[in-house]
Image (cartoon, rainbow, N blue to C red; front, side, top):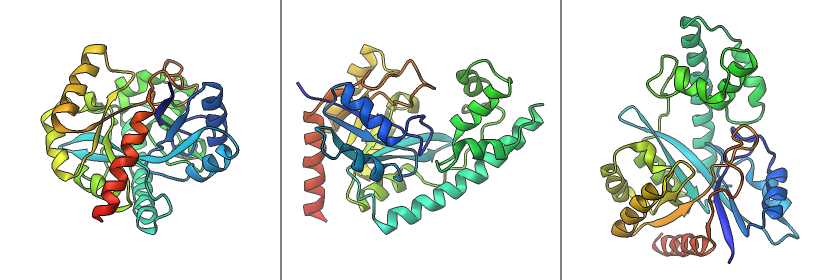
Length: 277
């Protein structure tokens, strides 16, 4: 059988590997396809497309949009997007500006907790990538304020923690509509994090086409639960490792993978959407 890992990140967001390194790893892992789904950016897609030339690996151009619903972060994966669409690029540029403001605010909140770090170190670590909480967690770790990256999220910068700032301007409806507007297929990422299954049906009303039923944090019964929801609502059941590289050693590439038939389902939905448009 052929398999695909449909949730990976590069150093163009909060992953460690370059797109080229990720492609090499995917080939050595004997995957047939990967989706590079960096947070709020498509900048890693072109380098990856160049890297897969003259190989048997298929690159699925994707991204992971950050949205907010009633003070809860919601992540929407967009598969097979038109990653060169000017409309998409302009919207992503604004989102990245919001991320910079958010990071400054989180660093200020950390200072009120007795933790003083230089925000410029966070931006320097992020480099060309969209800056995010993982970069902040790494700086906290390098500064000796935490012993593990998970501690940063559990104690300081996770939802409902003292230094957490919610600044995502997109609603789930807007994120789904943005993906549809650039001919992509919107899929709800890691649905367990919603902690509210009723929202899935609501999102379907906005045009959601799939749900990430297979995810590293899902126990078998949770996977089955979301597969059942997907079947009931007529959603594609995607899955992936949420690979970030060495900073998440417990999530190696291909830890969670799905049959290549899922890629074909995504392509079929995209073709139907394009006919409608």
